[in-house]
Image 1 (cartoon, rainbow, N blue to C red):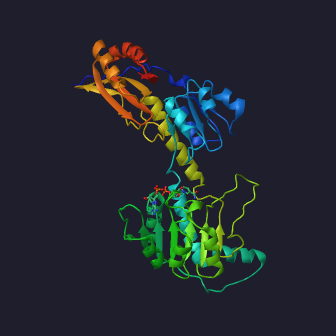
Image 2 (cartoon, helix red, strand yellow; image 1 turned 135 degrees about the horizontal axis):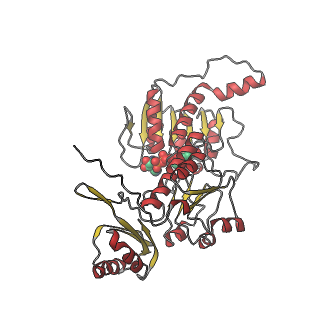
Image 3 (spheres, helix red, strand yellow; image 1 turned 90 degrees about the vertical axis):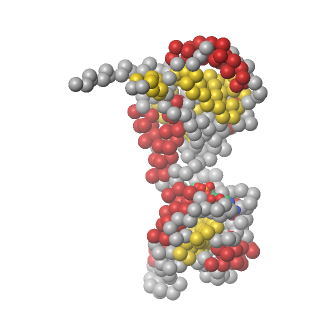
Length: 425
Ligand code: NAI
C-alpha cells in the first residue's frame, strides 16, 4: 500500500503578489487584466493614457507599468517610480519609452512584435483578391448608383504568381495562405529562408518583380529598405501587375508609383502605410496616390484586429508575469535576455524550491568576481548561476539553498556598481 503524499505546504514568497501593484493604462485588452488578477496581483487600470503630474503620481508606487503607444515614459517618469520592476508595451514599438534609462535602472521593457502577424497576412490576402476583381471600385460605383457588371480586367487569383518581398513572420504567413488559394508563390529575402509548401526563393528582387502578377512587401523599415521599390524597380514589374505595401511607408517611392498607375503600367495598388502618417483622428491625410480608383487606401490598420489586441495582451502579460515571478527576461528589448527554469531542485523524490537572487549591475570589470568572492566567503551552496550582459548592464541570477539566501541577499546589495537586487522565495 502506498502512503498518501503529504499535501505540499504553500511556499512563502519573498513579496506577496497581492502587494505587487500592476498599473495598466490606455485600455489594455481585458484579457490581460483578467490573467494578472487570476494570478493574484493587484491590478489598477485606466482607459486612457496618463501624462504630466497624473502619470508621475500613478507610477509612484507601481511595480509594473503597462502602456500602449500614447504614454511617454521618460527619464523623469522612471525617476518617479522607485519600485518599478518592469514595463510592458502592449504594442509593437517601444519608442515611447526611454529604454536606455530603463536598462540603466534594471527595468526590463517588453513588447509584442509578432502578435498581429496573422491580421496583416489576412488583410494582404483580402487585397490580393480585391485588386484582381476591382472590388473596391465596383462597390464605390454601386453606392453611387452605377451598375457595372463587366468582367473586363477581373481575374481569378488561382494560378497567378505572388511575389513576396521579405519572408519573415508576415511574409511566410502570406505564402501559406496564397498557396492554399492556388497561387504560385515566389519570395525574395536578404537571408536564406526555409520555403514553405511549394514557395520558391528567387535570387534577386529584379527576378521577383519580373515574374510576379502581384508584389507584396513585408520588409522592415531600415536604411537598406528605404525606397526599395522606386522608379527603377517599378519599371521592372510586369505590365498590369499589382503592388501591395502593408510594411512601412518608407519602402515605396509613392511619386514613382503614382506616375506608373497614371500611365496604366502598374494596374493597381493597396497601401496601408505611408511615408508621413497623420498623428491621429481628424488630422488631414495627403498622398500622391489619392483619388485613383484602382488604389485601395487603408489607415495603417494591417494589425488592428480584436484578435491581435487580445493576443498582444496575453503575450505581454505572460512576459511581465514571468519576470516578476521567476526573473526571466526573455523577449525584453533593453536588458540581457535570460531564460530561467522554475525554482525547483530535486533530491531523489523530494522537490525543494530554491531561493533565487536577481542582481542587475553596471557592466564594468570585476563585478562577477566580487559576487563569487562573497558566495565563497559565506560558504553558499550555489545550485545554479546565470549571467548575461549587454554593453550597459549585466544580469546575474543565483539559485541557492534557502538557508543561504538572506545573508547572501544582504551582502550582494553592497557590491559596487550594483543597480538592483531582488530576491524570490
Ligand atoms: P520580420 O522581421 O519577421 O520579417 C522581415 C523579413 O524581411 C526578414 O525575413 C528579413 O530578412 C527580410 N528583409 C530585411 N531586409 C530586406 C531586404 N532589403 N530585402 C528583402 N528582405 C529583407 O518582420 P514581420 O513581422 O514579418 O513584419 C514585416 C513588416 O510589416 C515590418 O515592416 C513591420 O513593421 C510591418 N508591420 C505592419 C503592420 C501594419 O499594421 N501594417 C503591422 C505589423 C507589422
